[in-house]
Length: 439
Ligand code: GDP
Ligand code: IMO
Ligand code: MG
Image (cartoon, rainbow, N blue to C red; front, side, top):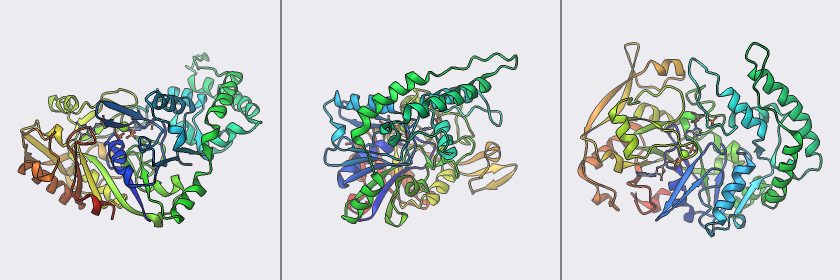
């Protein structure tokens, strides 16, 4: 049985959580393979709204096993909060969740480092991280000496390691926060407090920790169906995104295999999720950004405020240059176009089909953020359909102009639109051919 994947094709928040929850019942396992609590995936069922950060979006389906695999970085306090939140709403996530012993932990020093580093600008702009300790944790993972993994929570030598790391980190934090006069306002960490916390994390998370790598290989051998859930969006990929305004993991399609341990040969269906317009939260170039009333109108209608941080998202028109790039990079074979209801309120809708960079027409996404910053969008204009589509449940319910927009997006990206979302609820989704999507 081949695996299917859901990945974001823009700068995150494309509504991956909604789609994963919808597709989960067609699978045996849902797998989160990168990122951490920087992710905020929303699942809406009727009046219930679930905001998930680490826990895979298949968790609401008791028959689906959920995995947090080695490529994810886990902040245990946030994860425990999520588990408690689900338990308080009558869901027992402990029955169908497994955490890799190889997954790295976001420790208190990573949160402190993210806070300090986030005050620095790079290329004249602030990255504007989610302050969830993501970059510092991945840095220590690659550096190895200061890394703490889930399996370490059940090892007796952990308090001693924490004491050693805290010594080094306190010195580092002092150095990073020095204001030039020799004084430092750095937060200082207490090794004893952290070790006590880690002991509680071990007690509470220990029963969920295991070898997800071998377990998933066994599931594949047994013919089970896997659904891989990407976090962030492809343009935030550490290697292929708008570096340095990116996250610290491979959030495009290329990260699926390395983060999960599932061999690439099993990955058959890649569904790329995009909004019918664009958003970005945090710093970095954004060619189609609308810093005007139209941008604010998209923000208001789409309720474009961060799921994790509550920050207002930057909004703009759909950028076909960027999405064509990420769809090709991810090997995407079907597009899911979300938030079509939001565009119903505009007389005219623009789509960026190329960039003007230093007077040249460019159709290929530039690899350098400084070049992208100079890109002026070349747009085509579409007539808006001006009809409420939130009640649409089949293709026939969509106005002709909405059909034309969908067709044009598919044409520009080179991949057909197979899923259309017209509102946050599960019901507000149109599948062009659900059987064929995962066939
Ligand atoms: P994710 O991080 O990719 O899972 O996306 P987020 O959950 O951060 O952001 C997507 C937001 O859009 C959530 O609040 C969803 O409930 C909401 N949403 C999903 N699909 C639609 C849609 O088609 N229309 C509207 N108006 N909202 C949607
Ligand atoms: P989901 O999974 C949108 C952005 C941050 C910042 C940059 C680096 O919900 O789509 P980090 O904390 O990762 O070091 O921040 O990446 N970012 C996201 N933006 N959705 C996300 O996740 C994001 N995760 C990180 O805003 O610009
Ligand atoms: Mg999100």
